[in-house]
Amino acid sequence: MRGLLTPLARDCEVTMIPSGERVMVPAGTEVRVLQTLGGNVTVQGDYGQLMRIDEKDAEVLGADYLAQNPKSEASQAQAAEGTFDEERVWEQLRTVYDPEIPVNIVELGLVYQCKPTPLPEGGYRVEIQMTVTAPGCGMGPVLVDDVRRKVQDLPGVKEADVQLVWDPPWDQSRMSDVARLQLGWM
Image (cartoon, rainbow, N blue to C red):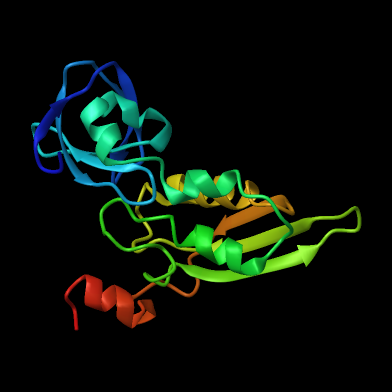
């Protein structure tokens, strides 16, 4: 399925990469699947434009796609039961991917802080500070929403406060060795 042209089964709202603009793409438009990490799907249109299809809309790629790409671990984790565990927060953060780079935001070094605080009424508030690889990237708010949604769905999390920050500026030195290896930069 990856790499083959696939017509969209219905009209679908997508996020344009890197602008972050939401646009409606009509049914029948042929796209090429490039990346299926973290549940969302990065596709390329017939003129080379990159678009992200949200996990909730992945069925527009057809039954063959769904058979080859079962629900992501991130979606399955939403149904997980239990008490708050900070490691689960980090696990969820590792399911958020830059739509252009096949590496999660933790390994890319985009997460600057993850601070859980117990709330008086029970549960936790998780404060996360993160950045993007370039200040002009329109995908920043999209990634912030992904993080907020995935962390908010964890057991024991009552609030998820995710802030996009620019200081210190991101650079490649923040990447883990795992990320460098994945990208062939070692």
